Length: 323
Ligand code: 13P
Ligand code: SF4
Image (cartoon, rainbow, N blue to C red):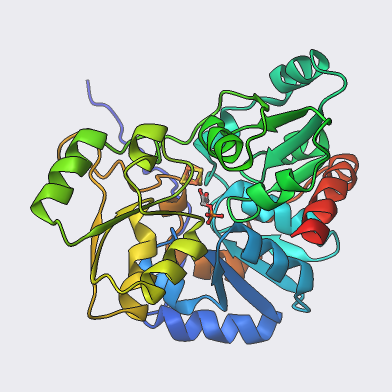
């Protein structure tokens, strides 16, 4: 007996132009679009972006832009933030699966129960959370303004800080404030090995260790400078040191090398041998091809329920006013 092999109907692959940079620039003009990108994106996406920044800078740009279309080369919570601030603009994300382990570590139903245990607490949430968590928060913060924002809250006001326990603990140390922490974290920033970093520092004694506050305390305690991605970039430009061990997602090293071509940047080592686990698997889902396709097809579009968006807008606006 013979088996009939039927041809499968595959969706036709969309043609990708040879010169993606030119094609994306043409679409940018046609759509009156702005491309906002985070430093953890691939180098070619960073090179074509209109604005590169940390989460605060990206939110400020999203709040100010007069473009009709915002193309967000970053992860879901960042595109959501752009939508919260721009309900009437089309917000595109090259890959809707670009999530965030930190945002996922704070499910809204569980957070609602947690929050109910502390009815007199003010909720300050790190921007790396879903729109639902933002909607349950009083103020949003980022890694660049968290200390400044907590310092503006009256001393007798108890605070819940969510979702990142590492940033929360760092802010407590910096402000001397005790806060109730949600136990969330980022898989990328918890991957660095203190032991291997010490070995690397011994092999490169001239290098300064710099770190993002999402890292765990055993890594942070070796850092000469701790800050948001933009703050780390600025620090490497201003420091007299010629070499740095960089404890954050290594995508930022592209901008560090561009700004200081004669300096040496060494990515901080991960616990596991020979893995790329210090690269954010969500950020890296975006590619130049997907960026082109999302602009060409005006899809995937980031949308939000209007009720959630309105509730999330209030703490976002408070953050922008307090920054
Ligand atoms: P910043 O760029 O605001 O420092 O945040 C880093 C980050 O984890 C983004 O996901
Ligand atoms: Fe989320 Fe961590 Fe990736 Fe940032 S690096 S987007 S916090 S998973």
